[in-house]
Length: 324
Image (cartoon, rainbow, N blue to C red; front, side, top):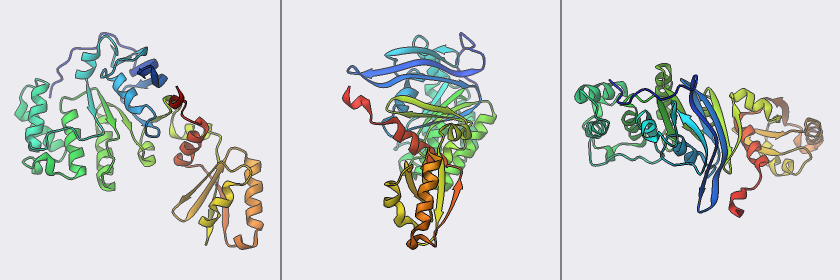
């Protein structure tokens, strides 16, 4: 398979994405506020944050689909403002919504996309793509009749068949079953091993932990970024896990106690988190001394990524864009 674009006009070391101060405003209201991202080539990065945090808008500015209101930078060595057409040719972008043709078969969809990219040896390319994504035995099925997992696989095939240097995935596994999600991520890492750079937005913490680094946005602002363990450690969060009969019923009481910033139930355990370790120790001790809690066991554990993100979201406060 060949790639149709020319070489980048500039080589910014080994960065696939190098953007600074990205701002996007609609009707005078900023939805993204000064985002900086420097992403090395060949890595898999997770893009996280609550709905409406600005992830999709940022992705679209990076790949040249949206012109920034302010800011500058490069993607694959191309200027995101003046060379957006080159970025589009060198990028695969999988949107949140399935955007292919339901009344065409899997093969017909791929053939159509291949023609859009002026791909040579189209039949050979489609055959290879179908085989590599495990779609060959379903190639005659109509796309509209596929389950969520198979639609996802078709979309991934369509956006990678031109061998992009950068793959942008916007919540690609929403609504698919756990096995389909695992298969999808196995394929993403195979692409990465072949040299492709991948930026994927997701709400799933287990997916974030599969990434080389993560970026967390809230209210249009970049809150934190780095390796998962570094993000957890830098949050300063401390967590205690309680297990035992009736532990769930302590949730409301614990939320009112000193030092407790976040309480969440995981499986059969209650996670109690905060940044003031002394206050937390005092609260847990008080809890243990209550007669009705004698059967509940407490231990300090490493905060989970989900604990950390909920704490970060709380620290980010109210969305000021609503009042702009």
